[in-house]
Image (cartoon, rainbow, N blue to C red):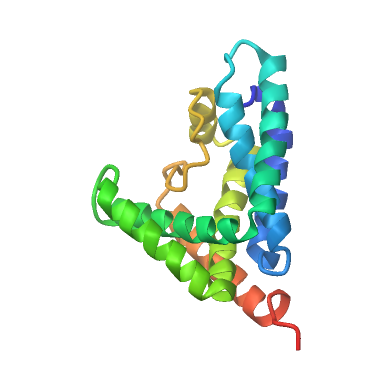
Length: 200
């Protein structure tokens, strides 16, 4: 991940991107794909650089982010399928974390990811709204934790773990999943009622 000097600008970008996704994800789906493509590309590219090479890590994050944004934006329908697959994998992890310990079995993640992908293609509008609402809510929370300097979030960021944005990574408070679900439901309601209405 990026050096700590860049943590506040990165956290601000997560908050803004998460808010856009949560409350206007369907209307601005291509923008949301570009945002998440950038985040994913930056995470993957920066993880390939040495932690001591700050300049190279920042350049790699920018180049990887741009490449990721282009890939997801150009692959619109693939992006929809990936959003559904991501939502399915997220559901698998959240359910497993709620009722058990550790990671879910690979088969459960794969089955729910495939089901999410198929569902996304069949029910594009609703899957996009739900996925962008809940994905945006989580991104917004991660950004807020990073901005407020939460100790557990800071320790996780300092550990060099590229998957700090992993869906079930949370600072450990029991209220975090509840706030995430409530914020995701609010985002879903806003999109269904206002920003995601189909044009007549």
